[in-house]
Image (cartoon, helix red, strand yellow):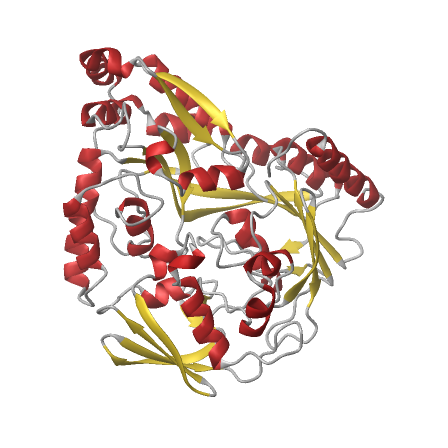
Length: 504
């Protein structure tokens, strides 16, 4: 959210008034209005135009996906009831025939094929394109069948299709992308009732939903950038669920009679992206210096309360492609200082460290200090999430020198992490390495697991040596929830309202 002039004041007053209106009784008491405090408002409600937590939390309840994951993490049917490989490069899906969009029109096989063609169209410029660009064709082959074609075998296809939301062809083509984002029409358990920009998105239960109905007649997703305010809302009973609390705030919920912490170790990895396309981090020795300067164990234990786990690669043990034995450079500030001194004046220029409110600023500030301690001149720049994402996906030669981020593909496959963050064709990547490009393509082009593991192992070792990205830790996510809420968070960070309930 870009806030200028009185925009921030208006948003703040709007949030405060909303809280006052709800303060008369705990939000769960009436059991008809479920309030979620996000960090930011969604940057998009079009599920194919953005990929970030605050957007995903909302739109995943508005749209159905081709396939999904159950609470155990296994791929399960959703719009597709079953699927079979016709060949190594073709897969056919059977589509439910009892789904209607929120405007009452039936969801068809052509809507599914259209959704695939749309997200893989380079003109749409979806930030998810790198996760779907192995798909070369999508065709409705019958009233309830869709066939997808891939450019060679694509082992991560089903894992990636977990994120493919089905959009209505007739609506998108009639109104265009911009208008669809402002008033999206899906087929999910909730429909968009209103979007007060900068304040909240309101969803209404879809009582005609084909699957499990939502338990709450109304769900309100509010933008509450300050974590302490999110905690206060829980304790006051004006919010039922708050995302992205830190360990200090979670500790304050211990013993509370109104709220509780819910913690899960996710498949999301926190990382430092070093822009190798511009000085000073076009110098590999200065990238090594950054790696030596960062105390991952100190970050996770000293700041994060031990919930998060240090990692030396961009994957977690939950991912296919995790490589045992990758160690990286390790924490050695004296070696970092020596490399900075060796680089001379090139290492003394001011470097920008980009961040956004959704991230734990205690970590960002600690990273800044650790780099300053070894001789770098680091300036933190804060922007709203939409601006941060735009810069991260833009021209890397004009982007920040450093950026702190956390990445999850919600697919548990290395292809969804390493390809977008490292392959030179991806807008997210600021790394140009022909060998890494070759290995990533080979890994996503074979159905042989042993070959894939070998290629990803090589990539993980190159990243540990070249440091285009510095993996930091496997992130835990801490939610705060009203005491009577029944909900089990999952590693892929999906927030399905229709998988929640109130305790009796």
